[in-house]
Length: 115
Image 1 (cartoon, rainbow, N blue to C red):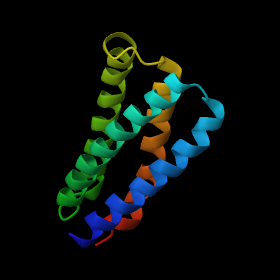
Image 2 (spheres, rainbow, N blue to C red; image 1 turned 30 degrees about the vertical axis):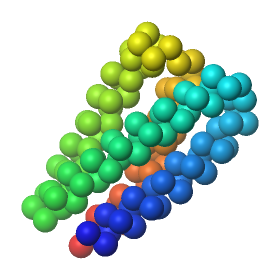
Image 3 (spheres, rainbow, N blue to C red; image 1 turned 90 degrees about the horizontal axis):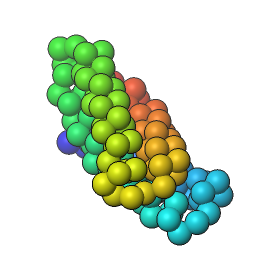
Image 4 (spheres, rainbow, N blue to C red; image 1 turned 180 degrees about the horizontal axis):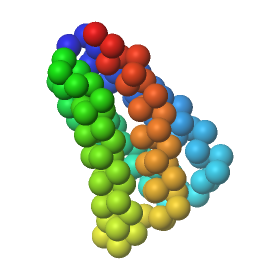
């Protein structure tokens, strides 16, 4: 439980930091709204993926991590269609920020998955 809490706090900080950097590339209000939505989606998906990887770490950490990667890829693909059509978000800002948020918070996983 302690590692999950550390991951939750650290990934929130990394996502916020990456979001601040991305505002330099995407300065409009619509872009910022897209990045906020992407940050929320990324944070929730990352917590679920980490929980899955952590649960599988006892038997097969690579399988758990692979399942998390598959979940992220599926969410990114679905989000690409939803962000553009249903949510009406600027597609470039939405997808680049979601991919960036996934990337930076995934970098924490190997360190915290060690038992």
